[in-house]
Image 1 (cartoon, helix red, strand yellow):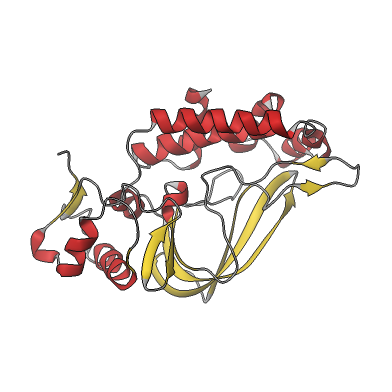
Image 2: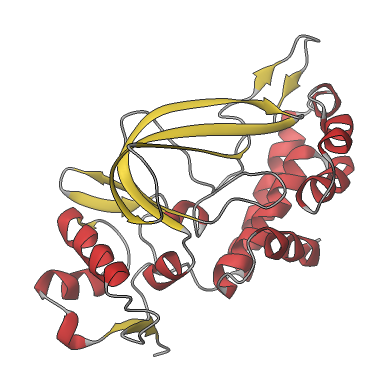
Length: 272
């Protein structure tokens, strides 16, 4: 299953950093646990080239709902998979991964969060009022979808569908001031998620910036050409986890992207 998870993510997001790919692959296992063992084949079909009609037949809401009768058992499976993921993934995504692996980087206010099904696939749809585009081309608003519903949904047949956004993935609330580091759209489904999952969603509040993962490991083992750094940058890079100055974070990312620091070898991973 671990190998299948890695294969799936490589098929969806080619040529991404090894750390992000491994962690995303492991999160696919959480998705299969969420959907139940019988749906693993459906997930593979959905992500690796199945037609919309094939996916719809195998993943119609009524089918997984029939399995959604034992919340405790399903939740236990998810916890076990998450524990295994935390054990196997030694390196959290860093700011180098977030910038290098992003197809799009935007900053703005979360305007709307909805969910639903398309061709039997559950999704959460997020609309952002964009204040700044650091990478990519978007307008004043940007809307994307990621896998899973916002919360369990009761269906017409009386069953409850439990296919919510997997644990560890970015979650959204209207009114959040955020910066999103986004992968390219999935080739088969059009779904899109943040680089490093929760690490790739940074929220600004009270003058501070913190990822959904608490910035843990974001600036660890990151080296930047000293001539490019100001005092705020140095404090940022010295932070192992927790909040950092919002303006300093935005400025750092803005200059790193615009100056092409990573491709130019001015910003990189280091082993200490």
